[in-house]
Length: 160
Length: 160
DNA sequence: AATGCTATTGCAACATTGTAGCATTTACGT
DNA sequence: ACGTAAATGCTACAATGTTGCAATAGCATT
Ligand SMILES: [Mn+2]
Ligand SMILES: [Mn+2]
Ligand SMILES: [Zn+2]
Ligand SMILES: [Zn+2]
Image 1 (cartoon, rainbow over the protein chains, first blue to last red):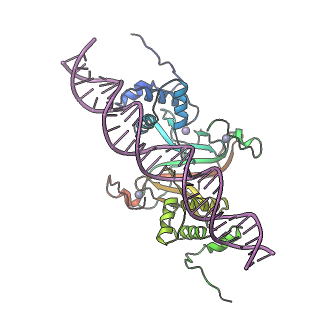
Image 2: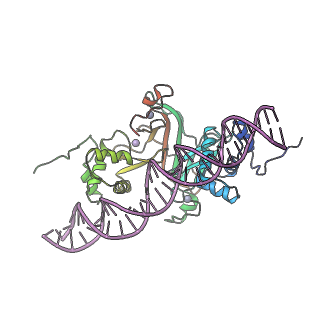
Image 3: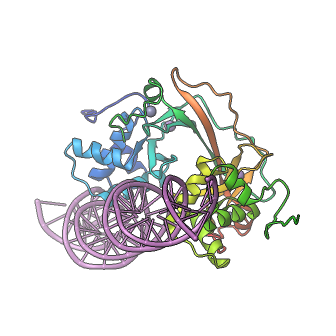
């Protein structure tokens, strides 16, 4: 039997996109596969716009709505995670077996978001009676290394 | 000399809206005053939509855009604070002299947001080199007391 | 390999939340 | 009471999603 690796085999901890989809009882479609693979190689959470551009760059035909629905499904299935920034655009990251929930840094100048894997929102918070905690989102705001350089340099380096 | 209190004199710690505006060098306008007063009596952060409804209920004519601009100005001046929920709508709260930045709870079922005044995002986080922290936003997600009651009761009690 | 079922897609229309430009009005210092 | 810049109130426009529905295409079965 021949074992073949999917073309973008990426880095350790990532499962083949197709298997991941099939194992969750979904149909393996062009857009789903492409989105998972894009998220797996991404160094940071990607917005819907980022993903659309990534697919386009790979000549993968896709529809805006389909992309939204693919992402919804991935999140429902626990394959991806949704992150709300301070702009109104969600960003997505693939859920890796090793990594847990973590905080994010959102650069208010260029809009880039980076993962702070080592910073996990403390879950031991006391809520009012009757309130049920599902998850905590911690987003730090400020200027990233690139943007913080020149004082007052509010550049927008392509990335959004 | 006669000392008159503004009609909605509200609760301790709140300054008269007009003074607050004037002290920041702004012009005292209908919408600004109404927004501040609405936020001062509000038990929880209000969305733009909430505020529009509140003004309408008080028969205060206002324009959508003007409301947005009033809120922008209040935030710029540090009179109000903007909170990003997980829906795409910002919410606003007045900055009281006593209270500091704090976390919020966002009910994913009814959309209500409540302040967790006692929970302040820890500011002692270590960021990558060159990153500059401005502020931290911590939002807890789950079900509020009202929504958590009946299992699976995803009601939407008017409040959004 | 062809068939059938239904999960997904693709398109067009719509919804929500916010911005931009610009002529008109209004707050307020004089 | 006046003059003037700050705010307003329109009308458009932009960004980000969602809904409905007919057409398509995965994939299990034959
Ligand atoms: Mn992350
Ligand atoms: Mn609050
Ligand atoms: Zn940046
Ligand atoms: Zn609720």
